[in-house]
Length: 209
Image (cartoon, rainbow, N blue to C red):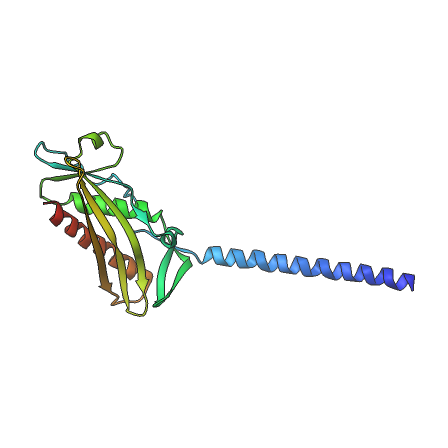
């Protein structure tokens, strides 16, 4: 009886170890396959960074606008591309991710798009050498930067504030910009996001001039 119990214990321990090794191997394989399947998407050209707009120089008559840091809703800050699957549910993809932190990528694109205007506006970043000379300060907050699956469109929405440094007066403007999805795939959605940011730039410029 004692021998049987001892033998049974060894068998159970051995079986448990084998099971543990199998689970560990499957977990490792699963992680490997998951990592291999991750796709990264760049909102801007690979070499583009916030502040690398063009070699535009500020003219004396230009209105200096300083752009503060971009803020996002918490669920947009995970790095995964966000899809709205119905009225009350979103999915954050682990397989399709932004190649850079989204606030940084948005700021880089907006800097390039805003700086392409010809309306005597000069844009610079917060904490630059020109910050103390700013005529206006621009702040942006995004509540959506999503693919809306039921409506087959991309959506960027939120608000921006423009503050005059002369009198500290602030004006708050809400935006909701949508682009139809005419093609399948995340690359097309990323192109839509870029178009929407260009539209947002035009709205901001019109308000500043």
